[in-house]
Structures are given as C-alpha cells and as structure tokens.
Amino acid sequence: MDVVVAHDETLVAELVSLINHAYARGEAGLWRGHVDRTDEAEIAEAVGAGQMLVVRAGGLIAGCLRTRALDETTADVGLIGVAAWGGGTGRALVGAAEDLARSRGIGTMRLELLVPRTGTHPDKERLREWYTRRGYAVVRRIPMEEYLPHVAPLLSAPGDILIFEKTL
Image (tube, rainbow, N blue to C red; front, side, top):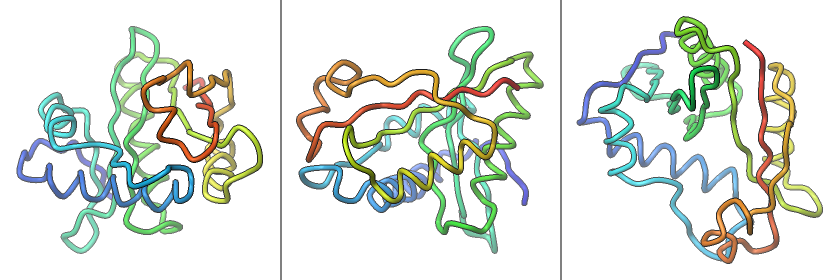
C-alpha cells in the first residue's frame, strides 16, 4: 500500500467527508447529536502544510491521517479516517507517519482517543487494543471538561481523552 503526502487542494472535500464519516461511525452514541470532527478550513491548512498522508486503492482514497511535529522530539497522528476496517490501511498510514517522524529525528509519537468515562464503547475499545498492539501506551487520561471544555457539553455522557505515546 502506497502512502503519500497529500499536496492536492482538490482532495480537501473528499478528505473531510472521509474523516467525518469515519468519526461518526466510530463515535456513534457518544454525542448528543451530529458533530463533525473536521471542516474544509482545517484540512486545507493541513494539506497546505504537508501534514496529510493519503492511501489510495483503485484510484479512490482508502484512508488518510494528519501527522505533525508538536515539538522537536514529539509528533502526533490524528484525523485518521479509513473507508473500511481490517484491510491494512490504518496500519500503513500509522506506519508511514512513524517512519516520517523518525526520518525527521523525532523520537516519540503521540495520539489521542476519546472514550466514555464509565462503561465501554465497542469501537473505542477496538481502537485502544489496536493502538496497544502497535506499541502505544496510555500515558495520561484527561477529563473532556478540562481538555476541551466547550466540547464536553456535546457529549451524551462524560468522556475522557486518553493520550497514547510510543517511542520510535
């Protein structure tokens, strides 16, 4: 699977749609109503900065993610969206982001995962296990009320952000 940096601004609407669809599917029931994860302005900025990685299959975008340096030693991955689970697209994207970070001398990769504070959510548990199998570990848990206070009221029940890190 070839992962490339997206530089084509004409992809923005397609990337926004893919990401928002993936998050709506993976966070079903966590929000009081429909909440888009991203918009065209955010993705256009990420594409312009060379932060969006894309995988194509059969000419169509099969998945994408944003990766960026947080500081001189840490990068993150986010805005991950795949058209279908289980085909290796997510693994290819995260692996490419890690390789890119390593090539830039970055030693730690970080990601965030929204989870319900109590109980479980099947897709969030699946993602937590998936990230753990790839060497990521939870280093911090932040209540959504502290992390994004303006977003917390949109949740259907209290939630937390798990901060995962992996040494590259």
